[in-house]
Image 1: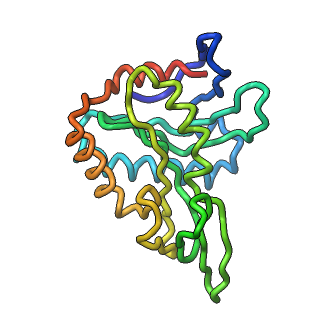
Image 2: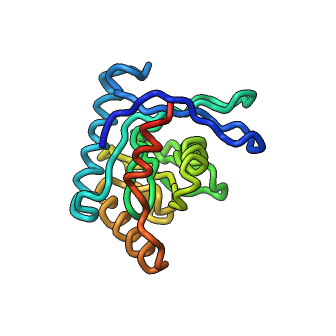
Length: 208
């Protein structure tokens, strides 16, 4: 399942206004620096497919380039996400991160420490925090499907080392297979019903 159509997202009046989202062809619809961004998104999508295919067979799909605009009246930045992977055991909002250096945790869950060449240390906002608007948006949009939605950050550069003590949703590409296997097994052990990926697909294609 691929592509998307444009339609309005509506909620019941007693609920707070929902952020608006859309998927799109990164070549045509996103105002990024196109060459680098398209390469990154396509590379991440291919990586996810290579990992999910042996785990999920055909029971998954990937949407590229989700843009989430904040609800009317909220002063929040627009959030752009590289990929959304939909599986029978959950929905994963995935971003590719191009940091260089050694990534370590700090005393604050919202920040990470980066030790670069020469020993220069700095703190940056955790990539998972940046994904929160998209995660919140999808959780609200897919509420009726009772499926877990979570963010994942993949540090794709060879010259980036991820300290094993950081949260498990911050990982290197070669850790993706184990990450998804653990998620699948945990989902099964909880005796939950598999997610309706066709229904979710229709819902995602309708956002606009």
